[in-house]
Image (cartoon, rainbow, N blue to C red):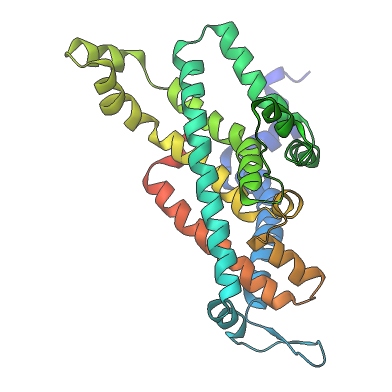
Length: 297
């Protein structure tokens, strides 16, 4: 009778040993399908958009001409309407980002450094709960709040004045600020929570007051979290087209792209205009990377 040591290893054992010896095969099987999806669907669609941006649409026949041309980009540069829309989108995205940072930082600081565990959990739950509601539901809620007969004017009426913010850039700014505040707050909270208390105690032991400690020790360590949060608010505002159309009745880059795809059926021009926010975010992400923002994501 053969001993236990004489038995040949089973299929599972041999397979496990094979993958242990060939780690590249194991890595390929693990990441093969996700990387195929990423390269084929995500990167592939961006490449198709990039190529089609250099095509044109024949004005008479409506047929897309598959020849290289800079006509779409020349139209974007020469037409003042598109320049105005682009600048408006960037301005609103920047203002929403700054506002979210100003609102999120004190709340994140209190939750991360001062609040008890129960209060901290309550704050985080209150911040995250709106994300459970549908995006369109929250947008339509703000549309009702900002109407002339809405909740905001009802609050202002006892003081003898009216806030007519409907269909304005102010309404867009308020709605975007509300929508993206959680995305800005959470990275800042994470950055504040990771700052060791020993750093602040050491600063105090060296004679630094509270404001000096905040300015020279705490704030530089939190800057990557602030920049990380700004990536979300800026990029989400830059690419949104629902809020401008429903809340402000205003054209953003996304609205022009949507109309070019649907109403005008001018896919090459839509692809060319879609490269504008891509280029803006590429520059923004490059600056954010230099600020160390990716470490706080």
